[in-house]
Image (cartoon, rainbow, N blue to C red; front, top):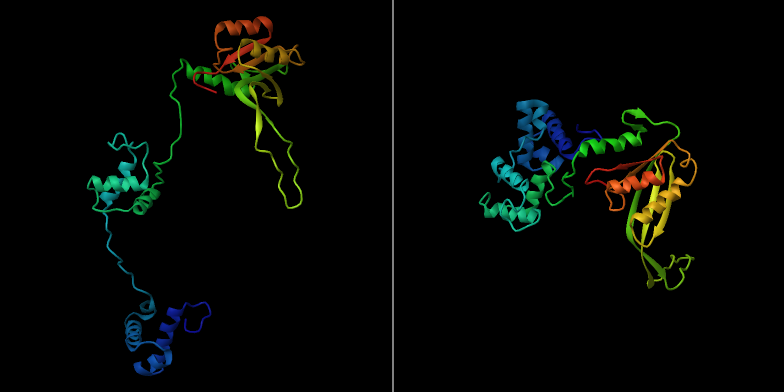
Length: 288
């Protein structure tokens, strides 16, 4: 310990004190040769005499007594687990400063800082200031309708595997896409210069993008229309179904959402009347 290269400074000095004392030197002489205070030399010499090598270790310090009880910490965490509205706070969501103020207002603690609250919440990974949107299930037979989607994507329908001449198409529409034209051409990147795109542009109106995706063969079909509706959707269906192998396929499943152009029974009948080998499959409400 006294001469090891990896020994820390404090254990090294304590070991040197013990070695000097073992050579019969007085405490004053040991203090002069090691550069330590006389009281320090006496302390480590007496500890080694009483406890041996374990006496050279640091004693456990009790530290500062805790300012907050376990009950106070639990009360703040419970407050963070409630909605601000239920707690009577005019907030949409909690933040650490607001939780600290609310804890002091409720006399949970005389004073608590936001950093202390943040440390408590981090112990249980509580983040009440974050939120995630979700939707309540309101449509009838949601589970029954939803189960068909992963089955079709796994090439199964009503418990039977799909044949080689059966296809699954997923279709959707994206309305109100802004068509914009730059007023000046874009300049290519040059030496020590990034590509330059002109800020001003002209509006070309809003368009609707309709797309169909062959789930198992990674084929995409798309078109743009002025708006959504029955005719644009049927035009997309005709664009796909007029091509092989869909024209001569045994069945082509069209997975569509609850949009107005294909949600009712008339729309399904219209689809099957135009293309008898199509099978419309609607996602449950709400679903995308």
